[in-house]
Image (cartoon, rainbow, N blue to C red; front, side, top):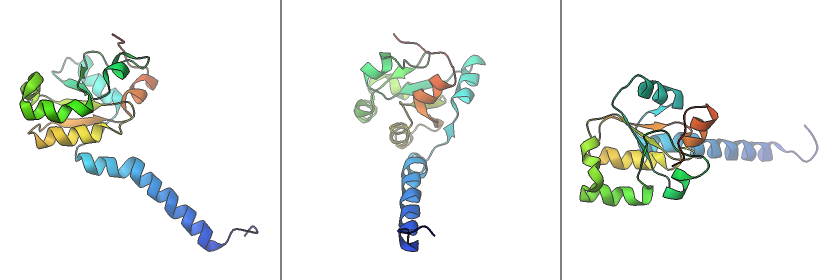
Length: 145
């Protein structure tokens, strides 16, 4: 073993790396309690003409910013979602029967939004894995206005 690396240090580094991985990838999925779908799977459903909704929970500036948004996406910032659901405002209750795909920039905010939607009675909710960043990297259609 190289000098200066004792087994205890190596174990601590390994534990920290596993904790980071759990916080980044496992915990958001557990919090959401919904499936995570690849952006391509969501696009296939849109292309097939299925009646689906993409709820983008980024800020309005992010929604129309350089990264853009998925075509037809509805912008409901995460900070506004709970209030809109509680008040029944914004026609969100009308979407309960449809498949709802929740998207943010990287899938960090989306699990929280998906959980709120589930609590409010939405039964067909999924998170777009990797968010808008993954959507754009996959070369899928993007709108900026």
